[in-house]
Length: 270
Image (cartoon, rainbow, N blue to C red; front, side):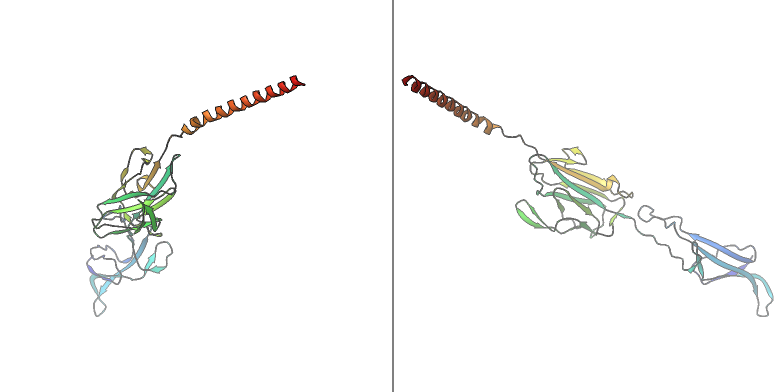
């Protein structure tokens, strides 16, 4: 059929070949994305467009042998049937990094802060990621440090500070995740200050390099640090006291013997 398309909606059907007169219904939904990892398909939404195809008439209302296809602006929502506008949202998928710190051992101090360097590979210059859950002021290296609570991609080093039992989120502002999926990052412990370091359960490690995963709560989005400090219990004090204990015992025994001899002498004189 030859004809033209008159549309008041947002769907381009100019190349569609209508074969018969009548009413048509087009189902529109999003099926692909140029970057499905960071911009997943909005597969939950589906819309109906309605088109009426009629004979095209001349000014005298005679048939011209052509048709006219008219698309109505009223689009109906697939689920509710209500009139609406077709809107697809390609919301960027974002994630966060969870960092935890624990200490253990008979010489560990739960008030000690530990310093970690944050490194991103592939982030854009000028990007700023929020650090959520970190103390605003920390005592580290004998000085009081005001934390920035952000990581800025500007060529400068960025650090976070944690003490025992604390959890910090990098790329999270308290409501929204900020890190794109596929972004590579590293966390490096700067100075353990006599502690033995464990990262994700591996002893002796001081750093961990990972890639942000699309899966929420994935292990690749978490790093667990453990700092262990153990020392031998001093026993010298026990050894040094022993001779004095022995001496006291000997003196006591001598006093008992002397006291006993005096009693015997008194009995003899009587």
